[in-house]
Length: 515
Image 1 (tube, one colour):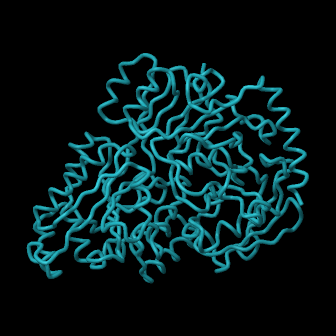
Image 2: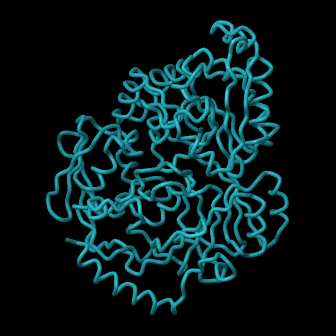
Image 3: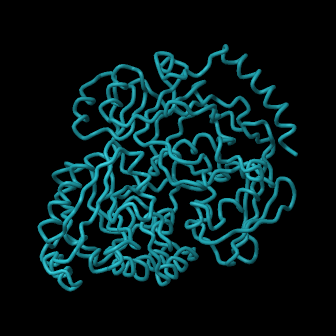
C-alpha cells in the first residue's frame, strides 16, 4: 500500500533535509548546541505522558506537541472564523448532519506517503471509537463514505447535527490510515505538520522542519525545534535568562518582576480557556455521597485563593467553563465559601462535625500550575475547620498526572483543564459525560442534557440549554468543583518574532523565529 512507496520517498526526503540543513543534527543532550540560532528551544512546564496516539491521551504537553506535528482539516483565522486547512471546502448534505469534505491535493505525511480520503476515513473511525479520549467530544461514533480519493462524507451514527463539528475538525489530528491499521500510533508521530517528529530523548521532543510541507507560506521558520519538559519553574527561568531556552511556560508569580526587569526577556500574560477544578473521585468511598462533595465545595475559600495566594493571577470561577469559552454562561447556585453551610451538609450526611468520616486523601501537584501546593495547604486548613480529616500528598507533575487519571488513586485531586480545541465539549463532554474523564461519574440525566446541547446548532438556544438544563444538574451532582479560571504567564527571548498564544494555549512553533 502507501507504505511501500513511502519508504522510497522517505529516503529521498532524508537526503534533501541533510543537504538543505548542512548535516546539522538536533542536539541529543540539550547542551550548548540546543540553543544555536538554527534551533528553537521551548521549555514545557508539563511532562509528556503515555502514548503518542492523539486519541490515547489528554495530556496538555502532548497536545501542544501534536499541534505542530499534525495538521487539521479546518483552521481558524485571526477573527476565529473557520477557514480551509487540509480541506479546501466543505458543505452539509440535505439531511443536515452529513458533511461532505473536499481535500487538497498533494499533501504528504512525514513518512512520504500521500494524504487522501482513506486517511480521513481511518482518522474519523479511530478518533470517535468509544475507547478514544476524544469520544466524549464527538458524542458518538462517526461513519464515513469515500466518494473519490479527495472527497469524503462523514456523519454521526446518532444522525443528529453536531454543534461543534467545525471545531472538532479544527483540533483533531489527521492520522495515516496505514498507521492506524498497523497499530503504530503509540510509537511515534507521523503527521503532516510544519515540523517533523524525529525522536524523544531526555524528556525532549526533537523536531525538524518538514521539507515537503504542503503550505509553504506557513512552513517552519527555524530548521530545528526542541520541546523539553523541565519540572522546576526556577530552572526554566534560569535557562531563558542564560539563552539556553527561548520560550518558557507558566512563569511563577514571584518571577514576573525579575523577568520584567531583564532587558533580554519579554513577559506575556494571557487569559486562556483553562479552568482549575477540585476533582472528586465519585466512585470511591465517601465521595460517592453528593452531600459530602457539596460540603467540601462550600468549605473552599476560593476568593482568598484568587486574591491573596494567586495575587490576582486568576479569575474566580462562576461556571463550569472559563469566562473565555465561547459558550460561557454563569451557573446559578455554584457553591461559594460558607463554612456554616458546609458543616450543616456534613451533619445532614450523617457526619456531624466530621464524626465518622474516614481520612480523605487529597493529591495535588508541584511544578506545573503556579501556587498549587500553597492553595492546597490553605484548602486543607479550611476543610479541617469544619471537621474533615485530610491527608495532603504533593507530587511532581508526572506522578500527579498518573494519579489524576486513576479511579482509585485518592478521593480528591485538583487539576486544570485547558480547552486545547476551542470546542466547549472538550470540557463539558470530557468531564461530565459518563464516565467522567477524571471523576468517573455517570449520570444518565447529565448525559441527556449534554446530548441536547451538543446537537443544538443555534448558539443562543444552546447557551440556554447549558445554563438552564445542564448546569443545574452539574450543581446538584457536584462531581467537579470549579475553582478559578487561569491567567498564564509566559516569557520569551526579547528578539523572538511571531509569538501568538491562542486562547487554547497552543502555540504555532513553526511561526517563531529569532531576530
